Amino acid sequence: MPIVDRREFGGRFTVRETSRRLRCYRYTEIQIMEMLGGWCHTTPSLVVRAAFGSHLWEDAQHSDQVGTRIAQLRSSSDRQEPPNDKFAHLCEKIWLAPLTLERLVGVYKVLKPHLVSAYTYHTDTTDPLADEPTCKLLTQMAASEQAHVLWGQAVIESFTTTVEDRSRAVAWQGELEQDLLECGGVTGSGVEAHWLPYAEPSESFVADKTIDAELRQQRNGDTSKRTRVSKGTYSYSKKSKPVDYPIVEEPFWYSEDEEVFRSTAPICELGSREFFAYRLHTLIYGEIDTVDRLGKMLADFPDLPWKMRMDIAHQIWDEARHIQIVVKATQDQGARLGQFPWSGIIWRLTQYGEDPLSRISVNNCWGESLLCGTLNVWIKLALEAKKHKLAELLDFILADELVHVEWATRWIRELTENDLHRRQELADWSRNTAFEIQQFRYRTNRVAAQDDPVKIRALTAIPPYNTPDDVPLTFA
Image 1 (cartoon, one colour):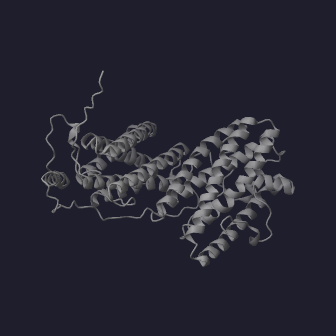
Image 2 (cartoon, helix red, strand yellow; image 1 turned 120 degrees about the vertical axis):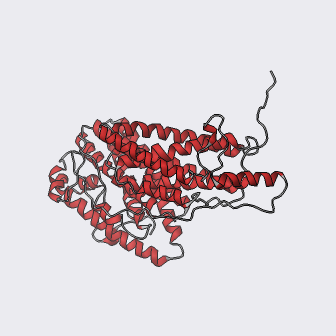
Image 3 (cartoon, helix red, strand yellow; image 1 turned 180 degrees about the vertical axis):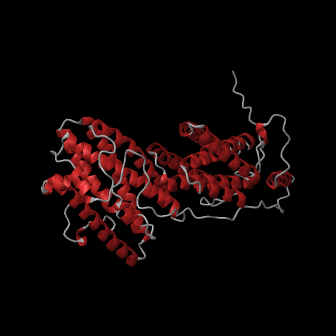
């Protein structure tokens, strides 16, 4: 049988209009990425936190891939823009939602379903031959977003177990959808008519008329006059109010009393079940802190180099996976979640500096660097105790952590290459901060270690320092 290609030349969108729409899509994907990241530290549910970490990485990939396609269409790959100011205000309204349910509804019942519709409409109406790269890209993105929507639907149902909660969610969704309708959606072009059988093309939005006019001009050979589609110029900040420590659901709990830490740290043999239960439980907190701090960094500093933001988003995904891995491993070692306290000291010391590099200089270039060595020790102890599955999962975590140290070191060096004074100030501050953290860890684990220097290093994952100058930093 002969192969029949039923595709036909011609579509509704010119190169210029395709580029404009892609810039709007990229804007929206980045907005959602920043929202999910900026919400992590005030989202109590670990399940939702971990999913935010996974989804924002996929949104970052979408943004990156769309940027590549924009460049292929003779525009700059880093361009993004809202279709109009009303759409930007809608995104801000969702960002400012104070509670998890409203946030979930805004992203997973309004923005992401609308993106699926917009991407599908675009692939159905553009030139399937000449614009095949866009078709393939948007088809893949629509499938990814649809998976997010299905996850969101399931979680929202679990959050709305009362009539009041469901009514609140429905009312909020209706309010946002009305705003979405009034601003014309992600492209400013209104509800896509292809969903409605026998519907006439919309005449109510300027963008629709502009597209038709531009197509007529191009097909008539007249490209001297181009009608400009208006675009949004409104922008807003996603910086959140300072908190002493991230919000977390029960059974996890915080304490500022050092005696509480000393009394709960177990006296046990290195490599024993109790040792791994305690250390892995502590590692859970570190993984959650990292998702929260890097998510907040994405929201706080939108002007960082795009490739650096991709590195940040990728690490958030890694750490979101680590949360799930370490929680399960901790339970396998016999620990009860919430058995040990959580301190907010690292969060308070490192998460509110105005220099974005201070958000990674201590945690990545000192803490995670030390963790790599600690994981090697734990792997050896696990193998000696014939805990082969535990050793294997720790080895996978180690592989991720090495990458996290590398990218942070590389970016700090690159961004301070021509400002060595800034690098020195960053190093001085980082060493003092790390020294303070080390002193806290040693004070709170001294009893459990029975003043044994080998044990205290294994329990804290930190070597002894006499002064801040002893603190090693990978970028200095």
